[in-house]
Structure formats: structure tokens, C-alpha cells
Length: 177
Picture 1 (tube, helix red, strand yellow):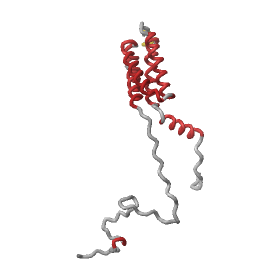
Picture 2 (picture 1 turned 60 degrees about the vertical axis):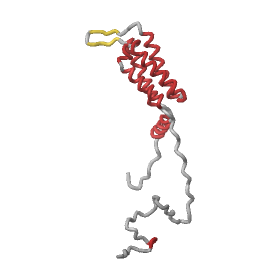
Picture 3 (picture 1 turned 180 degrees about the horizontal axis):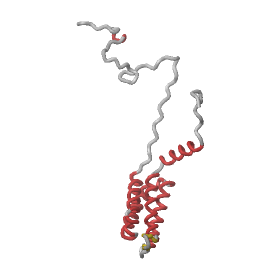
Picture 4 (picture 1 turned 90 degrees about the horizontal axis):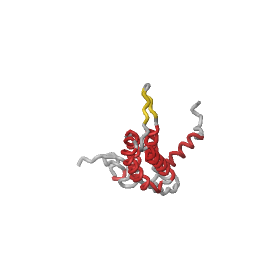
């Protein structure tokens, strides 16, 4: 590569990544992800058979059907937060309530992991608000090559603290009295 090499066009991966970033920024993405991830431990642990050495731990309880319903509902709420952002308040409150119900029904809410993910995701969904797009700045018409006028107190004003400018007539000379 040399110094004369021009910048290449962004590739397909970069284009898709930027599209995903725009899509993700217009909806409560992280809230949906937390609620979705909170549904999996609540759904999984009552049906899991954990192996600890030669010991098999079966977590099947009478709350298995309740855990199945709560887990599936949390997963559906997480997905709905991604694709239907207008239901964010309902989905957030429902996720918080389902997380609280999962404590007594589903092995302490999927051993507290699913409970915490769902609770945090529900709170994020309720508190999310769509961003306001930035106001468009008026484009200044290009003049005849003139420099932009200095605005008093603005950015273009010179930062001369001695006050010796041609504007006030001193031209760099100080008077003694």
C-alpha cells in the first residue's frame, strides 16, 4: 500500500454493521436482549438434569409448566421489544411482573440469573424513549471567496487578549498613558 492509495469503498460487512447499528439505535434493543436472555434460564432449569460427578441432579418440579409458560412469554416479550417498539411500556411491565412471579414458581427465577436479567430488561424497556433526530443546520451559501464574517463573541472572533488589533486603532502599539 502506498501513500497514493485512495480509501476503499466500505465492504459488505461494514455496510451491514452500520445498518444494524441504525436499526439497533431506533428501538429498545438492549432491553429486549436482557428480557430474552432472562427467559432462557427460567425455561431451562426445571427441565435440566445437571451432572455433578456421578450425581445426577433432576430439577423437575411441579412448577415445570409454570416455568415453561413464564420462559416462553419472556422470550416472546424480548422479541416483541425488538420488532414492535411501540409496545415497550406494556412489554417492560409484563417482563417485570413475570420476573417477580418466577421467583416462587421457577426455582428462584432460574437460580436468580433469569430473574435479574428479566427485571433489568423490563426496567430498561419501561425507561427507554425514542431519540429526537438532530435538527438540520441551514447550509450557508458559498460567497465570492470571502471569509465568513466574525460574529461578536462567536467562534470566528480573534482571541487577542491585549486588545491591540487594527480594529481599535492601536496596531500593536500601547500608549503609556
